[in-house]
Length: 101
Image (tube, rainbow, N blue to C red; front, side, top):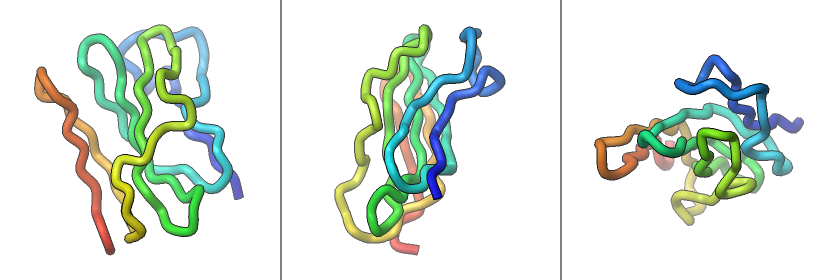
């Protein structure tokens, strides 16, 4: 089964002309969360493109340009990772997730 992470208009605090793809990798991508720093978005999601689900992230501009196509792994470990959440504290993004459960 293949699922594609898509940012939809209703998820964004700014207007884009259409939905667009964040990740089009093999496997199953799910549980997307979005943070915004006033300039760019940081999208995180649970990604099962490998044998075990991991948390990936990608930066996206307000105009919809994907700065990290396909995303990047946030933790290079082989234990199960799930339920990501992202926040911005006016300086840094803070991402949490469940690990090993």
